[in-house]
Length: 127
Image 1 (cartoon, rainbow, N blue to C red):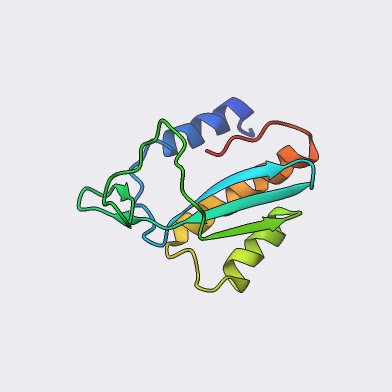
Image 2 (cartoon, rainbow, N blue to C red; image 1 turned 120 degrees about the vertical axis):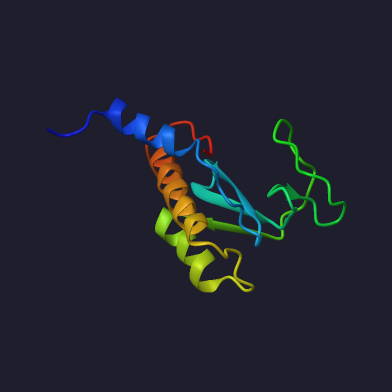
């Protein structure tokens, strides 16, 4: 018997609660540009402190999760599809902005979600 949507969601929600070792190569903010019909990903650098928290490379201060940061991205990637933006990041970007496989898998999933939201005119919120 196939799993229901709520059962699949429960699996993913539980997995989202696990400890995640952050990527020392940085992080991405993903959003949709509906006017241009693009998936966008801004890359930002970070350092990881002794507690495993992402910190500002300039100040050493942890990034707050409850407010928008006024930082400039090191690079911005765009694509019309999840595959297109993924290839730009994994095959064309120099220096390579990802150092962990779990981060690459996460990005692929998020890009697919963003593509569906773009095509279906749905809201997209990065997980």
